[in-house]
Image (cartoon, rainbow, N blue to C red; front, side, top):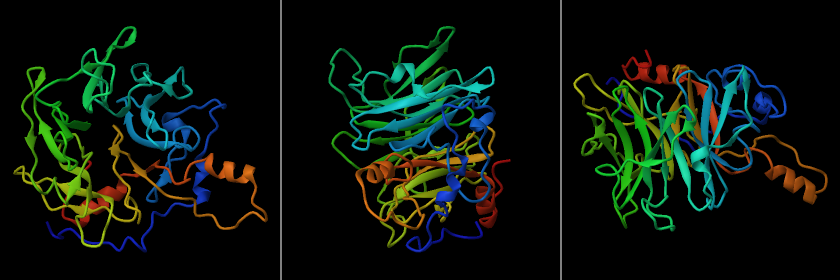
Length: 345
């Protein structure tokens, strides 16, 4: 690689998003047509994704889009994470449906996060703390899936061992062969590591812990793998001196299967607060979606504070809770080229 991973002074390099870029907002009461809710599509500056449809006043993260682009699943939770659900909007007869909690994600006793389609789109994997058996109390986080049926999604199925353990398993992400990258922390241990489980004869084999280039920093989680395995995006902590929090790093894979050192993805993806831990690329390879926490940048203040004003400030995205942003993948191609790589072909 021509350039080893580099440091950016994120204290002065903020995500270039302004309040004016909420221009893409579309009311859920309107007739919404076209892929990606018919939104104007971003270029090389990240924009808030679907304000008031996807990104709202709650905590938003984790995107999964069907291969035909007509189903969008995303995560939504209360700020205290007491309730967390997977929400879906579908394009039917050319129009998008109002986002609703997915059928398999409605039991309020448990949390549902991190949806991911299998390569053929016939399964939707996700993470939940539902108990494996009769106990009604939440358990440790496991990876589950539902299957498409003529009547809709099936009942959830826990994928079991050797992937799921007594610890926590998170954020499934799939290669084109159906192999799964995921995050695991052992029971009673807070530090997480990234694993890969090969899919063989209809089952996942014993996962392997990935090398230090993927398991970078003092903690890392929720690695996204591009389907051809040419690169991974890893949210990681303390990879670079002076950066506190979770920042997005891209890790390129060589032709011999080895991995390069992690590269900071820059101000387009990382913010000074370092709260980025969910990344995804659309099936058409045109857009990257990622979670970021950013407050509105508009200037000016009301002449007098009021309760209505304070409530209105919270009841919109960019209020300090995580939101979902999107950007053209051309930014990632340029980053790869600067490091001697050609990806997203």
